[in-house]
Structures are given as C-alpha cells and as structure tokens.
Length: 473
Ligand SMILES: Cc1cc2nc3c(=O)[nH]c(=O)nc-3n(C[C@H](O)[C@H](O)[C@H](O)COP(=O)(O)OP(=O)(O)OC[C@H]3O[C@@H](n4cnc5c(N)ncnc54)[C@H](O)[C@@H]3O)c2cc1C
Image (cartoon, rainbow, N blue to C red; front, side, top):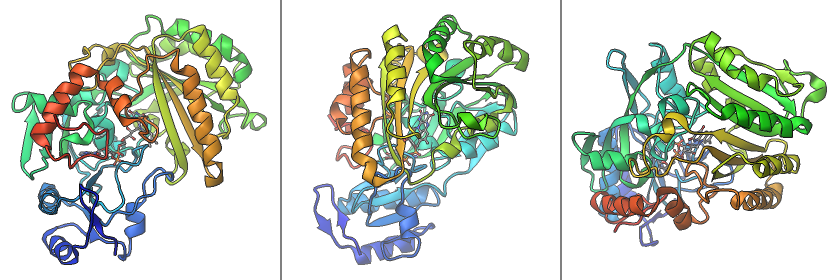
C-alpha cells in the first residue's frame, strides 16, 4: 500500500477510511495492489511517472463530491484527471487521491439550441463524434485523444480558432464541485466571475464535472491543405506563407510544421524521414472557397508531396493522433511571437535541422482572427494579440536520450526568447519548471490578482494545486 500525502506533505495511512470511501462510490477505487492500478495511473507523457495512493473512477458528480469531501476531511493532496494528456503530467501525483473523470464522458447535444453538454472526462473524440452527427462542432485542439477538461480550462487552440475563437471562449456553462464539496452551476447569469476564471484559469477552482459549449455549423467536410516542402526551400516557402497570412480570411487556420517527411504511402518513399517543412491549413467554409483560399500555400516551391483535399471534419481532428502515442517521452515548450520576422524564419529552419529526434517538430501556429478579439482582461486567458505561437514539440523514445532532448529543447526556446513576447502558452508549458514566471507572463498582473481572489473564494486551502497553480490571495 502507498500512504496518502497531506497538503502539508505528511504521509498518512487511511486503509479503513479508503475502504469506506470505496463503499460509498458508484465507480471503482483502485489502490496500488489492485489489478488495473498501473494502467490507471499511467499518463500520456512517459516522462511523468506518478504513484498515487488511490484512484477514484468517479461515475457522476456525487462521486466527485464524495471524494472532494473525503480529501477535505483528511487534508489530502488531490489530483484531477480529465483526458490524462497534460504535457506536464499534472493529472497525477505521488501519494495523491486521484479523481479520475474518464468514465464521465457522455455528451448531450441540443442541436436546435446549438449547445453540447459534455462530462468532464470526455475527449475531443467523444465531443466531435456527438456534435458532428448534427453538422456542428465546438472548437477543440488538433489531437482527438486530448481531454476537453484540461485543454478548455487553459485556453484551447485548434483548427477553428480563427473562425470561432479559443475553446474556452465557447465554454458557456459548467458544473463544478468546489473544494468544500459544494456544487456550483456556472454561467454568465449565475456566476460570471467563475465563468471568467474557467476561461483560461486552469484547474484551480474545483472539479468541472460538466462543460457546456456553444456549437457552430462545421463540415461535415472541410478543405484540408497539406503540402510537404523540402527544408532547403523553407526560406522561400515561409516568406510566401507569411505574405499569405496577411489579411487572411478567418475561416482559414493554419500551422507550419518543421519536421521530417512522414512515412505515408501517398508520399514518395525516397523522401521519408528527410527534413521538411509542412504547411497545414483547415478551411472551415464551402469546399471550393476553401480550396481557393488555401491555393497560394500549395505553390510556394516544388513540393515533395501535396495531400490536400476535402476531408471529414472528424478525420481532420484525428489527423495527428498516430504521431503522439501514449507513454513516449515528450517535452513541449512554446513562446508567443509578435511577428513572423526573417529572423524567426531563419531560426525555425536552423533548429528544425538540428533536431535530435526525427519525431520532434518546430511548429508555428497562426493565431489572430476570432481568438484575438476578446481583450486581455475579458477572460482569464489573458492577452491574445500575438499573431503567431512557436511550439517546440520534442518527442523521443529512449529514456537514455532524455538529457540530450531536454537540453536541445531548452536551447531552442532560449534562441527564440529575444524574438518573442516572453509568454508561453499554458497548454504547452514544458514540465512547468518555472511555474510562477510562466503564470505571470500568461495571465498578466491584473488577471492574476482577480484569479487569486477567485481562488480564495473557491479553494482557500489550495487543494487544487497541481495544475497551473494560482495561490489564494
Ligand atoms: C497529443 C496532444 C495534443 C495536444 N494538442 C493541443 C492542441 O491542439 N491545442 C491545445 O490547446 N492544446 C493541446 N494539447 C495540450 C492539452 O490542451 C493539455 O495537455 C491539456 O492539459 C490536456 O487536457 P487533459 O484533460 O487531457 O489533461 P489531464 O492530464 O487529464 O488534466 C490536466 C489538468 O487539467 C485539470 N483538469 C482536467 N480536467 C478537469 C476537469 N474536468 N475539472 C477540473 N480540472 C480538470 C486538472 O487540474 C489536471 O491537472 C495537446 C496535448 C497533447 C498531449
């Protein structure tokens, strides 16, 4: 048995108490000696191995309340798990009681009202499958296995960001269990301040057992532009790409991937693994219009391959799924960029060339459009004025390569620092090494003060502390 850890860092044995807790739950409570414990504690990022003392597979909001009250009564460290895909592994901790929401993944769609209510443990695969039945979608991320909980609470940038905003902008209501076990129904009328905080303030305020999203007509097919260019042509390609993004229609959202040529049957095999730059764009509009709007980025140099064409929106959402298997080693950093300057282009090319792992990518996310409209204090998310986000996604397999990959990633981010706004994106925060500075840069001082006051109201003992933690005021 593993002892439970208190908020003060003490270890306590609560075998009888945990037995009684298990009896009260509708879902299972797993302890280290139980079958299935190792699978249940495993997180997406193999760099983040945690050994919680107990994992509660909550079946409903009442189970969550029971766990939160149990934790409060014994002063326990709590972890909350949505999709388990947090890059920094915050859904688990040694000695913690984990509230695992994965069984709470039902999605109910009100097609007429264009709303979807999803359980706090749903993934985007769950949400997209349900909403696309009606030709609707809520903006998500670009990998369908990601949990809606963690992604939404820290922002959410995906293929619809320029047309319909961040995922958190489309969060219109939530049900939340606060640190004292009380249940809060949150929306613009009932608790606008808490809704403000949930739009970017992370998992600080309690367990969100239901999230309700504004939906938009999308698809069922969208135009996917996917052109692979040799890295040797990248200077010309990225220069042309930058010009194309000026005054670009908001229906089009795009991403530059500096990486290796994918081993896809539709790509000539002799190019597999070569360094390349891939321009990927989603046009969420009529297919002909989408094809026209994205045409310029398919003709910026002689491509290695062009896999563009109409695809079901659901397939687009799964386009990168296979690239990020569970349990590999991951270290993802980011920086907002005030411009796609010549120097940014040069460094993107140079750092793409020196990647220590063929799986690693240097990405440029085009922002702006609808996601940039809310002001810096309109949501807890903070300032949205940067037009690009650099993502340095280091992905590798062998633990023996950890040091080399971590060092390369940090040097790469350091090299871009002077060209950036200094702000990371909280969903790509490395291993949250410098939590305080990262949070200050992300939210801004005014938002941080407001978040601290909200934290004081919802969680004065700071029980929900593992994510992007905001101390109570
Ligand atoms: C393969 C992959 C692709 C990604 N792509 C994108 C992308 O395109 N766009 C983007 O914006 N981000 C992306 N991300 C980052 C992602 O948004 C974060 O890693 C996010 O934390 C994942 O959410 P989760 O619910 O799976 O995380 P978990 O690990 O389950 O949870 C992370 C934290 O969120 C909090 N949390 C989660 N659910 C709840 C809840 N219901 N109530 C209260 N707190 C909760 C908890 O505090 C927990 O510590 C990606 C991540 C991965 C691994």
